[in-house]
Image 1 (cartoon, rainbow, N blue to C red):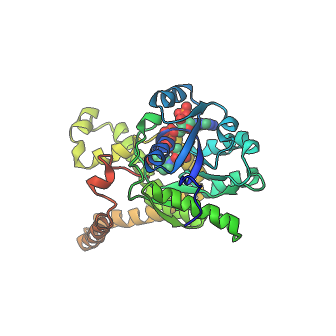
Image 2: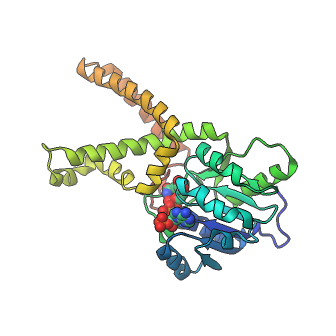
Image 3: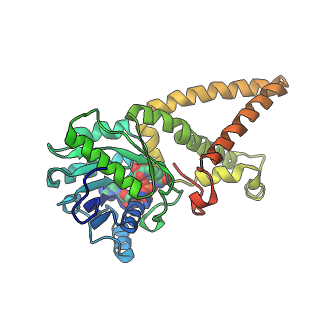
Length: 314
Ligand code: NAP
């Protein structure tokens, strides 16, 4: 366990930059767990700032990242990936020595590369990514239970000095207090894993919904009416935030293209098996994939309780 503040708080002051689904869920969960004292928020959107004020879970709401991070012990960057370094650059000079800066971006290598040169001496950068989410956006979409029994992946820098290791351990304790399980890995591996488990599935969903919308032989009314045949699940994923997902594909280009190459080869093989009537090949694959689904359910990553009725995570 890392040392906690004298009052039992993990971080006396939390600052969140970008208070949408993930940022607001972190604040709600941290407040519910009694992990933080004061909370400040910086957000670029006037409507979202107004919403955060109405929801009443922050002590300070501002457009200025530097004002929000003053005296903060933990700063969480929760803007879309491509906006992170710009927002952080505005805040960096106001950070207090000893503060920890983390982020929740769905891509890690590009974010770390952009943030690293901006971090002042004596401030600890410990990037992260909660594998939890919904297809909704904005501060009103957040909820305290979002991270319960979900994984958060931290991608700490390759540093072995005690102050840095203690800062990372404190962040681990924070995520655990929010109900998350915590794993660590290097950022390149994170990006490859997420390309398979999240980014490619989203690309496929965006593509299949786009294809259905463009078909001339099947009407829009038929697509809606018969969507329970599998299409409906894709539409939920394809409803995810366009800004966030544009940024993810641009920032994780190499890993996504690598996995997409493998996927295309496998799809070609499936297409050949269908053309040549190779039912055994299809049956063997579908049997293997069914076992994977059962493994996910057995690991508690697909239960109504874990989803809180919102069955989606990225
Ligand atoms: P969101 O609901 O759209 O919230 C992002 C917030 O940041 C919005 O209020 C946005 O305002 C604001 N913002 C944008 N640029 C800013 C800037 N330069 N300075 C300050 N605020 C700014 O997005 P989210 O779903 O919470 O995602 C946030 C991050 O979490 C992303 O990096 C994403 O990759 C990651 N993530 C998302 C999920 C998920 O399922 N959604 C899961 C895990 C991780 P505007 O709306 O006006 O732009």
